[in-house]
Structures are given as structure tokens and as C-alpha cells.
Amino acid sequence: MKLIKLFSGFMVLAVLLSGCGASGQSGESTKTETVTAKTTEGESSRVIEHAMGTTEIKGTPLRVVTLFQGATDSALLLGVTPLGAVESWAEKPVYEYLRGQMDGVVNLGIETQPNLEEIIALKPDLIIASKVRHEKIYSQLNEIAPTVMVKEVYQWKDTLNICAKALNKEEKAEEFFAKWDEKTAYFKEKAADKIKDTKVAVIDFRADHARIVYTGFAATVLDDMGIERPESHKKEEWGVMLQSEEAIPQMEADLIFDQTNLNEAENVTNRDKWTSNPLWSNLTAVKNNQVYPVNSVFWNSGGGPQAAMHMLEEVYEFYGIE
Image (cartoon, rainbow, N blue to C red; front, side):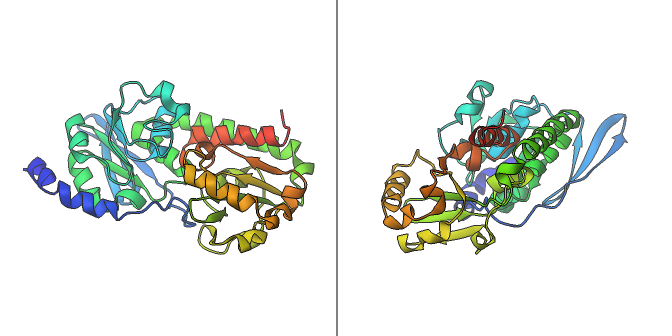
């Protein structure tokens, strides 16, 4: 009866999901997920608190489905290849940095509208999703398999933590975080003189506007590295949306990281137009040749710990830290 209900509701769900826009740059942090252990009839189980409530998971899941980029990245880091995963935002269907780890993984469609029929067919024993993308279908997903959700897709540490708890791989997550803390501390020590009293802007050109990004995935990494952004760049929940070239002076900073997705031709065209404006040439970072194009997958859309580590390594390189 559950499957009949799922199939009959599929078209309605698709419409609902299409209205759920990407909001990976919300400034609100997810609550900390917690886990308790107990034993049920001799089988180890864990009750996980997550963005949609609590979910009991028995044993170690083997048939896992991931419904957002950071969950896929995290599962792979933990040594778990998902049976199915949503396709990437760029470099489709799978980000290049993950391709060697994704052999045989079923494409479940786009992140905001995953293919429920395919998920059912895979018979998963765990689904990892996000409230910001999948809140409206949580009950349907939970009927298919135990489902845990993070609140925000850009909070990659929360994603890794909940994946580790759900997959029974907490030791591997702890190993990664130890390495992360070591590398960020080393950077702050070696780059202290370079980052002191220096403000950095993260910008992103889209087809019809430009953005100054203050919070979001890249910000979580920069914060850990001790790299500050101008307070003036925090105009909205996630940053500043610039509608016209006259607003270019708002990008003022000592150094600019440009995370524009170059896979979209319209983004490139708009960036070329804006950066040809004389106002662009007046920016301090431009005058001092301190504008660095960066990998948009690592800085924005990858959303997981592996992407974060790649981003950290890029920042090491930009600052000349070995």
C-alpha cells in the first residue's frame, strides 16, 4: 500500500519540489545533530536527531542514497559508495573530483527534484537528504527508507557529522576533522602577516547580475583559515546582490576571489562586461593584481568535506603557503 501511495503522489511531489529553489547561501546555521546508542533485540541501533526530528537506524546501512552534493561527497570520504545520488550542478553528471569514486552509481536526477521511482527501485536502507531541498517529501522518503536530513546544504561539517553517525563511520570523520584542524592552524600561523588587516571579497557573476558572497560554503572555509571579509559585504542574509555595474565599488577589498561558474556561457559574458567597466579598474584588488579566479565547484557547489579540502589547498597556493 505504501508503494501505491508513493507512485500516485509522484506527479504532485514533482510540482511541489520544483518550487523549492536553491538556498545554499542562507545565513542560518543548522542545529547540531546528536546521536544516542541502544540495543534492540541484540542488534545495535542508533537514534539520530536531525533537522526533521529523529530517526532510528539499525546496524550499519549498506544501501545508501544521497540527495544533495555534500552528502555524496561526505559518504565517499567515509568509504561508502552510494547506490544512487543526484547529479551535480556543473560538470554533469558527476563532478570531476569525484568521478573516480562514483563508478556504478545510479543518477537520481536533479537535487531539487530527485527521481522517487528510481529511489524506490534501489531499495535503500538509508536516505540522506536536506531540509532546504526536500522538506516537502520527507514523509514519502521516510516511507521508502529511514531518512535523515541536514538543515542547510552548505554547512559541510554538519553534513559530514550526520553522515558519519548514520553510516556508523564516526572514527573516519574524526580523522578528517583532525587533519582539517591541523591544516587550518598551520595556515593561520604561516600566513599570519599576509592575512593580518586584510579584507577579502568573494564574488560570483551570474547571467544577469553579480554577487558578493558573505556567508555560504566558501565562508565556512575562510572563517576556519582566519580570512576576514568586509562587514559592508553583509547586506542580506547571504551577502549582496548587485543589479547594475554602477554598484561595482561595493566589491572593494584588498583581495578578490572570483567563484563564477565558468561552465555557464552567460555568466562568462556578464563577467567580461562588468570587468570591462572603468569602475572595476578602480578597485584596490584589481589595481594590485590581487584578483584570483577560483574553482566554483570547490568554492560553492561541491558542498562537502572533500571539496572543502580542495578549496583549502587552493587558498594555500594563492597565499604561497607550502
